[in-house]
Image (tube, rainbow, N blue to C red):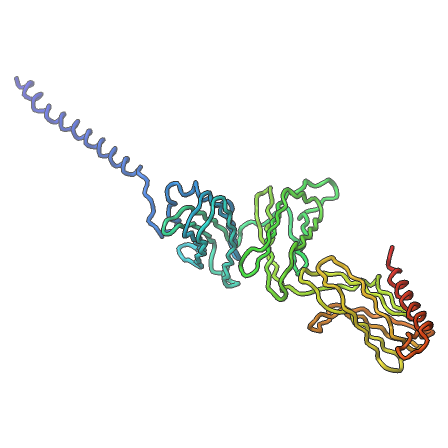
Amino acid sequence: MSLQGKMKLREPEGNAFHFFVLISFFTVLTILTVLSIPVHPAAGMGDPIAPKAGGEENVLITDFFSDHELCDATILFEQPLENVTLSFTLSSGKEILRSENLTLGSVETGEEVTKILFWELEEDFGKDYESYTARLSVHEGNEVLAARKSSFSQRSPTLSRIKLVDFSADSEKASALISPTELSFMQMPEPSMIDLNLKLLSGGEIVYSESMENIPVMESYYEAMYWPFLLEKDRKYTALLKVNSHSPSLTSVYRSDFRAREDVEILEEDVDVDEYGASVTIVGKSQVPFDGIIRVVLTPENGEVRVYEETADILTANREDTVGIIWQGIPRGDYNVMVYVVNLEDEVLDSYETALRVFEPVELAGPAEKSSGPGIMAALGTFLGLAVIIGRRQP
């Protein structure tokens, strides 16, 4: 009986132990379930606000690039929207270095928008920060439709197998010289494949864009890209060249600023000067139209300086004009000849210097002569002489 009593006394302890194990198991299970629920960060706590449901299907950020100087973004809208705004931010850690909103307003179905924003930070900003994050969000009113971010640092890798030797732009064209970083004379190097994208900006807006893809670079590669439209005189322009290397996949952007100006060049091999007159050929070197004159100055060793002028055609890049000038009769002697190309503001755009010796003067008939025969013959001879001068440059 004592044994049965002891067994009855121990039975409650066993039940309590099993109850305790069950409670502990469900407690642990509850804690694990709670921890597995994802927690979304609050707005403004670093990452962009989550896009509106279905928004990314209608708004696609197809390209987004940023470095310490600029941010380049392309957005495709697949349905019409109203009150669209682009929000750009550049931050380092929790510190916002730059923030700007660009208002697009209404957009149409299939419309693609490319915007470039210059961060305009201090030149030595990299000394104070290790890494950076650029963010773009597309808003319709207060709703976020799409968002992207890009992180970089001053130590971000640059183009490794190729290097940009030179990139410059002017009123005629943009030109780039690219070469491999290592040239081997023992074996044929493997070509580096690159893509080039050129943009021309004026007043912050893109006025021209040109792309070339899958360019093999095995040796020095030069590319000249001419502006296919007229530029506005004295207006400031910015050319941007984005170079994308395929392997490894790296992108770098290069910048060149210029002010659009008239520019022409005298073709020295096509300048002819003799006792009859002068023939001068000039070629346009700018997409700012040239409007001006050709001025020829004859300076004798002794005597009066003579100046002759003739209006040239309006010229743009790669267009030529040949101007003929007839001397109105110059005395025998030696002359220093200066040829100037001058615009309407009397600014000399190009010049050429040569010398002339006149053995026998060629006189044109004056209006007071009674006999028209000799005068006509003299004028005809002068014009024929000028035709010979101009004809010399023909192949």
